[in-house]
Amino acid sequence: MLGLDPRRDRADLTQRVGVREAARRLFGSEATIKTHLLHIYDKLGVRDRAAAVGEAYKRGLLY
Image 1: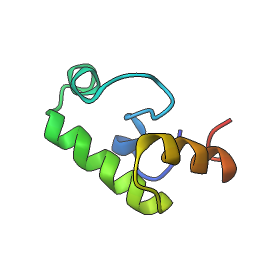
Image 2: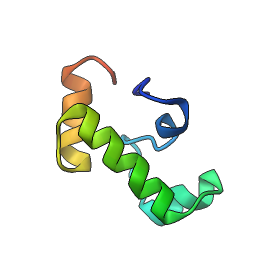
Image 3: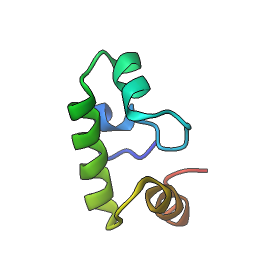
Image 4: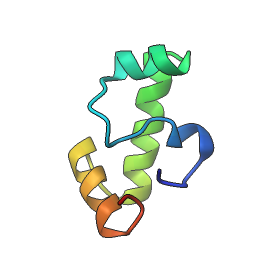
C-alpha cells in the first residue's frame, strides 16, 4: 500500500471500490473514507483517485 498512514492505507486505491463499500468494509463512515482519500491526494500532490494511483506507481509505492 502507500505507507503514509496505517489507517489510510486501508483505503486501497487500486481496488475498484467506491467510498460507500470502503466504509462498509472498514466499519467507518463515508465521510471518514473521503477525508482519508483527500489526505492521500494531498500528500501525493494530485486531485483524484486515478491521478493518485498513477503517482503512487510512479513513486514506486505500488507495484
